[in-house]
Amino acid sequence: MKKSNLTCDTVITDELRSFIGLESNPVTYDIERHAIERFACAIGDPNPLYTDYEFAKVRGRGNLIAPPTFYRSLLPGRYPKPYPEPFAHILDGGSDYKFNESVKVGDQITVVRKVTKLYEKHGRMGTMLFKISEIRYTNQEGILAATQTTTTITYGTGKKDNGLVDH
Amino acid sequence: MSITDQKTPIFDTVSVGDELPELVKYPDTRQLVMYAGASQDFVAIHYDLNVAREAGHSNVLIHGALKSAWLSELVTSWMGYGGRLLELSISYRSIDFPGSPVTCFGKVTNTRLEDDCGLVEIEIGLRNKEGLITTPGRALVSLPTQQTDD
Image (cartoon, rainbow over all chains, first blue to last red; front, top):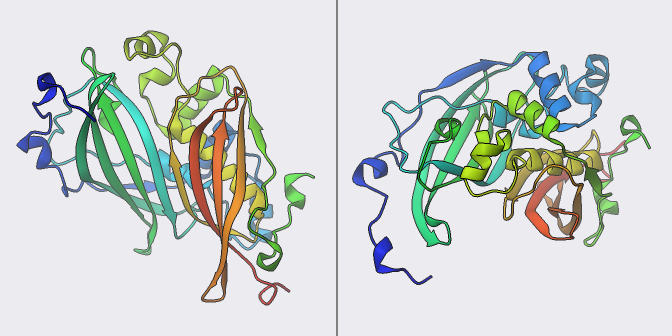
């Protein structure tokens, strides 16, 4: 892509770069059935493994399990220092999940996120910052239950979207 | 067929080119609010039209992660209770808006045996009512083989 002279200044400052590899403060969630029910209902997935305890037991799951992308609702904590987000607007670029274990009711899942890569692109919407984060979900037995690698895109000026800080 | 009847396909009977039954969703703003609450995603472009417009959109937009949830349902309902979803990769290439139906589709692109596990790779995606694939992706599932099935 051709870069105009006006956009040669990078938004990836040394301060921002210092977040690469820095882990967020771990957060541990107790998984309760109503959170799973609400999630399954919100996405509109009628699978009884998520809501029918007897059914899940008969199917050898031991307890209700959560839909695969339920992990997404277990938000990571903040970084040990404030993340200097340069932009106001946010778009989700995508997610890659690797699942080792389903989340079950009664699990305790610890979530840690770190930024693995930062890069920028210059286009129609001006400069856009791409942030690749890896989120690790570890269960109460110390088993890595899943990882999610996400791409977060931010751009533009103005009033910051109040949901920015969680992504 | 109700979901409780769903049978897991045996790995040996799955072939490259097999298509998954399509899944059609009818998202509305109510569902976006439900998803925001259930997933703790409070990015305002998904429920506040003024914020969405300020960010350059014509309407509030569907959470990418909600589209991922539908694509995971496409795969898990096909694989039934005996399959396992191992990987799910989704790319939000274009934005989708509530108010019109979207269709999730999938096609088997590779099958292989690894350590006695029947692995099936599926190209998946979501297309809008104009037929544009807004959200392509890929899933990897493990299915029981003839040997492991009783």
